Image 1 (spheres, one colour):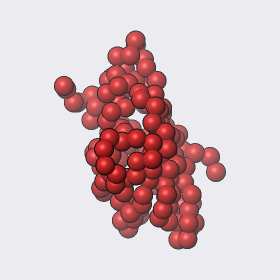
Image 2: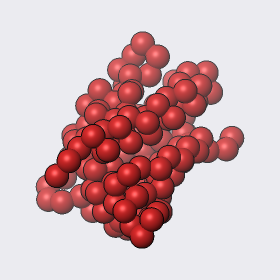
Image 3: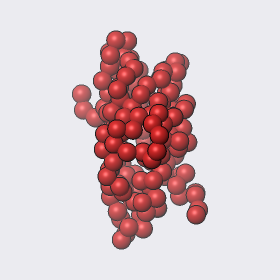
Length: 149
């Protein structure tokens, strides 16, 4: 199956967008299915940093661990699930617009199911994410454009 991909333009600089989207503490603020997100490793986020994310999938709350596999500020990031029945593969890119005053954010998501996840991915997860990702990106845009420093 192909990855689910969404693009949105945000009236904030790539640096501001990148800092926000790669900070796990903000995940529940802009992702509808994220119930909580906790960094499992000490220090600043780096490739190899692990995050415990609890997501609402259907009517269940499912914890999963994801790991940052790429961090290229302020251009891109990548996360891969390392455990749990549903393991996401997320890739994000930020493209500067208007001499860096605005940003174009592209997020691609794909999933690997393990055990019960093999049923959940096609029947529940992918349909939910197809609906949710555009709303998540709109929440991200609204949140960042409403924030003033």
